[in-house]
Length: 339
Image 1 (cartoon, rainbow, N blue to C red):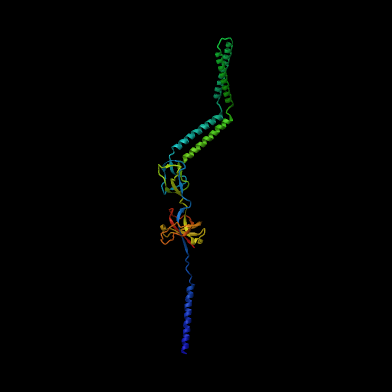
Image 2: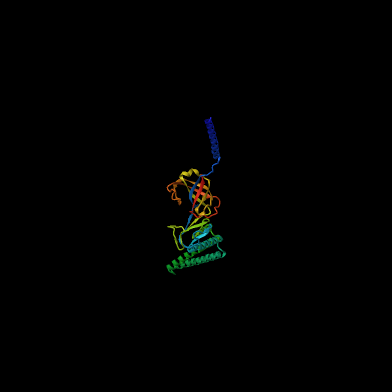
């Protein structure tokens, strides 16, 4: 009887323990697990969306002014530097004079001769005709006297030659008068018009040459580097940049994804970027471009345990909206992606 009592008591204790610990286990298993999403961190550097542009002169000369310094913000079309332009200005002045001369000749060709010119040409023709008639009379008289031996044959020959010259001069004067009376030929007007076009093109070329003595900003941006000084000689044999311009209004991060994590990224993936210089601040970014070739790691961090021989895939993350900060080009940032 005593053994049966101990057996029943042990059985009750075992059942109670089972029920108690089973409920605790069930309660513990019913607790939801805290979601701890894995985060992929890709180191990178800030760079402009468009590559910086090295700007230099298209013509040779001596730099007389550089109007910007590194860090200056500039607008499209703003003059950044100047060459000595005295020779270029002289060419423009000469071309303007040549164009004015060509236009005057064209107007003269279109209008034709003035009445005064016609009258003068007519008078010259009449005078030449009268002179020819007089010389002709002298020739006839000399020939008659020569026939009777009153004058030498040399005199007869001289009067004959003078008569022929006078006749030719009269014919030329008459032809000039008739040409003026008919007006300017169409070909002459066309030639004068072509001369205007040629002079205008020469003036345009001279103006381009003058404008090329000015170095202008092609777009809005910030001067990253100044590579020349006033007094430097610009040559076309070895062209050298004067300044480097970058558009810092549109920035992106070129980050590196470890080879083992490339399957976790996709275009349009939303992430955020951080930088040691900005503490805990997070800047929203979106994955805009993924390259298609693995390469060596180029972005180094300060962790001595970090591997440097790993293969990486470059991706481009662009800021969502305006970051609110003017990040310097080359700033190291980390892009955080959710796996």
